[in-house]
Amino acid sequence: MGCCSGRCTLIFICTLQLVLALERQVFDFLGYQWAPILANFFHIIIVILGLFGTIQYRPRYIVVYTVWAALWVAWNVFIICFYLDVGGLSKESDLLTFNISAHHSWWSEHGPGCVRREMPQTPGVRATESHSYITVMGCLVDYQYIEVMHSSTQILVALLGFVYACYVVSAITEEEDSFDFIGGFDPFPLYHVNEKPSHLLLKPMYPST
Figure 1 (cartoon, rainbow, N blue to C red):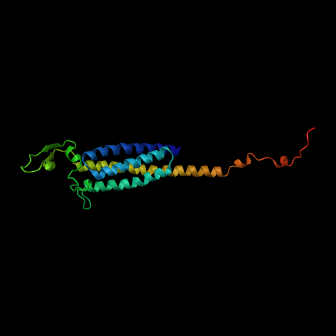
Figure 2: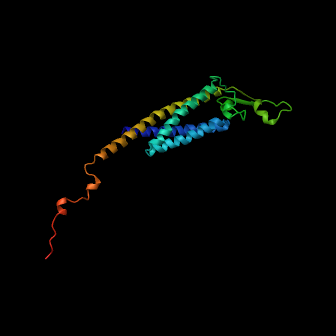
């Protein structure tokens, strides 16, 4: 009963993680955040693997999911530090875009209450640099705090998944061990089924009259 409830809870957590990961992937695509896009992609694959392992009683798949859950927590801690400028990191850098573009979080221009205005371009400036001539005003919540809330939610759900995954793996392993233990002491092995009593083999044969 405990294993069943644990499995059901883990299935729910994995499903919730998929929904949250897809939502985050959409906004990271809109902001051209290539590093988070790759991380989200691997996260979705591993969560699907963990969901399959939970449904099909495959503890090895669940172990892979458990290891990834720990790595996913570490990644989101890094994202929080990045947007809060902790440890020499800067949210103004192009680290998450692999330094190939000047794009930032989608929420920096489209957050709650934000008013986006394009400033007139200076003569002689190329159109490709128009991104730097955009001002955003009136945001109710700064974009870095929205990103921090996203990562904090990911950490909370991943920790729950880690705990329940460990529990499910332990429960499945105990069930398999108990099954092998009971089977090993079967009082009627299969190889005795077709054996005949020895006295029948020694019964003399009389010719029929």
